[in-house]
Amino acid sequence: MTTDAQTVANAEQDIPTVEDRSARNKLVIGLLLVSAFVVILNETIMGVALPHLMADLNITASAAQWLTTAFMLTMAVVIPITGYLLQRLNTRPVFILAMSLFSAGTLISALAPGFAELVLGRIVQASGTAIMMPLLMTTVMTLVPPESRGRTMGNISVVISVAPAIGPTISGLILSTLEWRWLFLLVLPIALCALALGASRMRNVTTPTTAPIDILSIILSAIGFGGFVYGLSGLGEAALHQPVLSPWFPLLIGGVVIAVFVLRQLRLQRQDRALLDLRTLTTKTFTIAMVMMAILMMSMFGVFILLPIYLQNVLGLSTLQTGLLLLPGGLIMGLCAPRVGHLFDKYGPAPLIIPGAIMLSVVMGGLTLIQQDTPVWMLLIAHIVLSIGLALMFTPLFTVSLGSLPPNLYSHGSAMLGATQQVAGAAGTALFVAIMTLRATSLSAGGAGVAAATTGGIKAAFLCGMIISLGAIAAALFIRKPEHGPGTGHHH
Image (cartoon, rainbow, N blue to C red; front, side, top):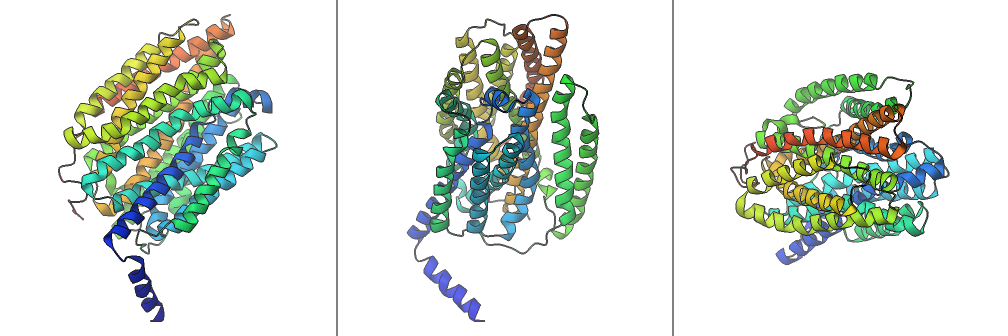
């Protein structure tokens, strides 16, 4: 009984006043936001660096792709487990675990002697990143009262949308003067500071529950999501040369295993033992928002991958120029996000999401018209319009999707959103690169020059992106604001 008495005594010391509690919550959320920013920035920092790495490590474009793909694959495998981790463990140990993994991965990458070690470093980094995002979302939904959630979600959108958007710019700035290892060496001290600060100042803000873990579910989710994303990436490889293994094989296996995983979760959730509780999908608004999120991530990552290739390999811009060209879009996205959160609280999702979806399609359509001599300013405008469109959709989608769930499903909802983003991002990257490679290869075979072939390949990929983006417009028409305010409808 002494431990119980101690716990009560500690608890009484811990929460003296409401002011202290609100200050503590602010500190916790602030720490999580800064850490999440550093961690997510890293997801797209490699895009601009790929041409450098290809030359430096003597690897092909589709091998270099693995530095981004392996990162997303790991995220897709780890994120489904985070819903469970967040229920079992307290905020502080989860945060320390996430930042330690991220820092270790950054160190491995910085010191990597070759390609294999660099991929390993990215995988360790990604496992830390995967834990960070759902931790941030669940903590905010737990701590922030419904009336100020829109604003806080706006800040989260800044992190989620701006970090990947300015990744290429920061990368370009670093690579214009330093070698690629500095991409990791410069992030490392920031990550270690966040870890030290978090270890000393972070407080536990959640109440862990005991839920038994289902090992079979973890294995199924890893094979299913992993195989699926791996198959998608293989499609790009297959375009270049006869692969050892047909990419359709892992795609098929991944699809089948995901189906088995889903059936297993449906059985386990009756006893509240699911690794990923799929009851989140019975909420129509959540499901539609998730589909839209998938389309956005596919389009966004596709563009992040293709634009730098086009700017550098066709228009002959340097990495620094490429990075600077993509900067205004990233900054505008960041400035829009809090404003969008405010507008969302006032007018609901439809007036923001529908114009956003239309802007996305228009830009994708416009990008199918690029030539070998397209003026750079037109691409700058396209990228800015795209960024505004994405900003109009991100905050409302996050708020609507999680707000439509009952509180006991928040951690599963954030894990589902996270997993969707990763799988869709990897799928978008793989699909766009595959289409570009296929088309460019066939044009080269027909005697086109390198620049002409690359341009043709990129146009074909953007055409596919435009067709996908039309799905976002259709889905946008069905998004509604949750009837009950978030957190008021405790329909357990």
